[in-house]
Length: 132
Ligand code: ZN
Ligand code: MN
Image: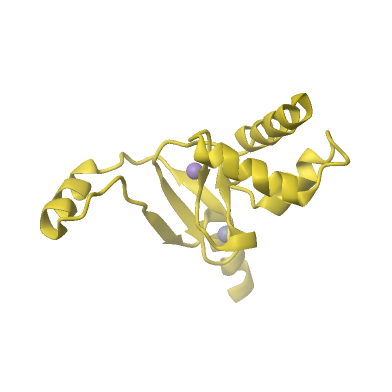
């Protein structure tokens, strides 16, 4: 099925080319520039396949608002509470937390997610402008 492979590759390329952690809708509109007849359902299906094979990660499981990440390795994020943008945070993942929680709870821990919340630099600046 060469067509399906081409679609999957285009989706992966779009996702790897951005650091914006886009939604499926955003990916869909970008992939359509290359494959105009692709459907949103195909985008969703391929995103799921790419996630299942460990090539990408899904940030949160909130349906249509879920954001995708071309980087499948565990890393931390910052989400701006004003503009909603998501940034990568260059901070080592603390694996000792997993061990400690596993010991405390008896759960088998695969990994943990960490998301910082606040205002991005741009939003801090525009807030200052607004309050003048
Ligand atoms: Zn912001
Ligand atoms: Mn990320």
